[in-house]
Structures are given as structure tokens and as C-alpha cells.
View 1 (spheres, rainbow, N blue to C red):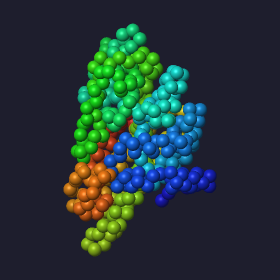
View 2 (cartoon, rainbow, N blue to C red):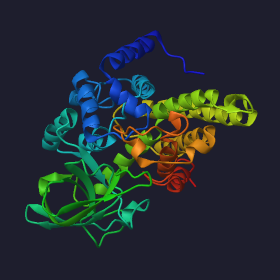
View 3 (cartoon, one colour):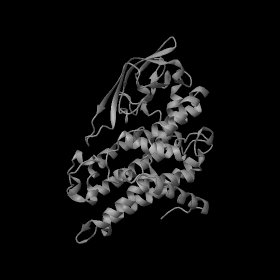
View 4 (cartoon, rainbow, N blue to C red):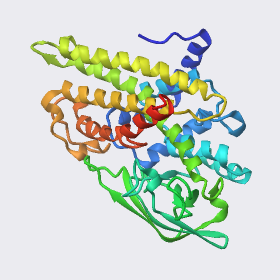
Length: 398
């Protein structure tokens, strides 16, 4: 069951489909659909295509080079790109640090950094989590001490996604160690080529290098790279996290994965009949689809309320909780749908240039990796347990 769209919205959908047919490279879509690892050049190629078409900054105002699309148009774009097998837009620059700059940045920061995000000159990564500060982010210990016209940064960040590709990192640092936990924190923009920065890989279960550790040893950062006021960075941090949590819901990706699940369940047999006809399995698929429809409606309401340029409120925590659980459930059902073929995992099959044939159905190749990788969804961006506390306090008043 789909939402009802106006004639204008359906025309917009056809426009996006036409763009994808013409501009989405088939080899790139094949890698995404096949669960292959994407390279830095893959991401940069798609970024450039979207930027040239004016389809990159879907949630930016037109004054900054954005699309100015309505929430429904943005929803349609997300849905259609996911269905077509397009790579997800990397959120760190376009959807995370950019909104912070628009709200808290100086005019000079906006004039310099926003165009560089659009044209791909800067690849951003996120410096939030630390070994002792994950969901309890306010417990961070990375220090930044003022020394003339620079801050001197020392400390460590972890779980830095694709940090090995980034030339810029937005970082939460403690500038007043005597202040209370949420106070005394500042938001800095740091050039990753600055002396004193070391990036070390964290190899994940699937053999990939998605995340990293980043170490700062006497790293000198110009004072003009401070966003907002010194010691007031927690406001920037919270504002950014609401955007991040809304994105983690991944409605378009979930709908594409659900459609893939239906296809796989229709082709796999149980007792001589399609698995999709098994009452227990069919009931689980139906439950996911119903919940996803409800989440889709909630997501549209949240982004519509934020259309004026503000950030989503505590409702973004609801989206994060339900969206992450649903995406985990879909990968679990996909894994179950191919049975024992989902058990073996060969990391080299995730690389695009492999000539090794998979054992069993081709769709089984990425399922083990996807299943374990999706476990992180309920942890990063603030664990679901933390999000439930936010909902209890901010929405229910408990």
C-alpha cells in the first residue's frame, strides 16, 4: 500500500526516475544492488553527478544552492534513488555539518565551506564519539586549549566513518574542563592534513575499513574555525544530532530492502512452495510493511514541521528508534530467507573485481555482512536506549 500523491508530485517522481535512468551509472547501481564495497571514487562520482544536476543538497534552502524541495519531494527523491540502487548521499557534509554552519556559522564560514561541500572539494567526517564517550557524548575528554589565535587539540575520537577519505573533520572538544558536562564544549572545524593527526583503521567483522580511530597530538586549529561561541558547542552538537537521527531512519533504503526481501522470499522454496506463502514468514513481512508505512507517515510529518528551517525535535529520536529496528528486522528476514546459504562469508566476494563465484544464490553473498553491520544502527547516533529516555523526558514529560 502506497501513500497518495498529487499529480504534481507524481510528475516530480517521473522527473527523478528519468534523471536516474539517464545519469545513474549502471556499474555503480550494480555494485550497490550486489552489496559490493564502494570506493572513494564511487562516492565522488555520484556526488559530482548529483551536484551538477542540482540534486545534491535536497534539504538546503535555495539561497545556499539547495533544491528548495518540499518535504514530500525530498521523500520521493530518497525513495526513488534507493529503489534505483543509487549510493546513499554521504551525510557528514551535506546533511550534518552544513545545517550547523547555516544556523551557527559566521558568514565567512558559510561563504567558504558550503560551496566546497556542494562541489566535493571537502570530504567531511565526524569527530564525536570517544573510547569513553559514546551515547554519553557529554563525557568527551578531547581538549582544546587556546594559544593566541589557535586552539591546540589533544585527544582521541573513534568510530570515525570513512575518516580515511576525509580532508575535514567537525569535532566536539572540551575548552573548559572545569565546567559541567554539557558546558565547556566547543565545535571546531579541523583540517585533517594538519600535523599531529593520525588515522588508524578499525577492521570490521566483514573485513572492511568503514570506521577509524583519529588521534590528535598538539594539533593547531585556527580560532576562526570555531563554530558558534566558545563553550557553547553543545547547542551545535544537539542540533546536528537531530538531523543525523532523522537520516538514520532510512525510509527509502528500508523500502528498497523490503522489496528485495519480497523478491527473495518469492524465489526461495519451503516444502515445495515459495517461502513468501509460508504463514509465519508472510506474517513477519506484513508486520514490517505495516510498521514501515506508519514510520513513513511520521517521517513526513516531522520533516514538514521542520520545513521552516529549524531542526527536527525529539521526534527525530522516535524515527531513529523505529527506523533502526525495522532495518535490522529486514536484514534478519533476508538472512533467514536463504537459510544455510547466508552462513558462509568470504570478504573477497564483497569486492567488485572478484572472479570467485558465490555458493548458492547470488543475493546471499552480502547478507551476513549486512546483518552484522546493521546491528550498529541501534547504537550509533545515540543508542536506542538513550533515545527512549529523550522521548520520555521531552515528549512524555516523565
